[in-house]
Image (cartoon, rainbow, N blue to C red):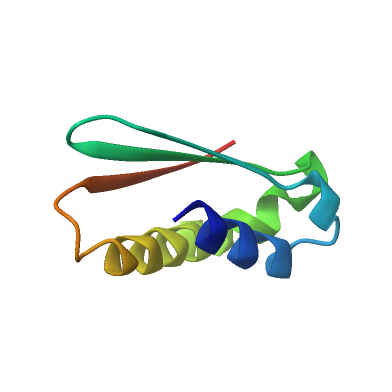
Length: 75
């Protein structure tokens, strides 16, 4: 999941070197934290949060085989 979020985020921003993705997991959830440069924040969130919602939807669809819940946090 981490690689998927990283590929999507790097394709959206102007500064791909500023993209940092970290992943933690426990028994029931996978937490993915996406950090981007402040000037790229709007590109990752999108108007009304549409792009952020789309990223979360794609990641949840990719994780649907497993039994774990996936949470994507954008910072």
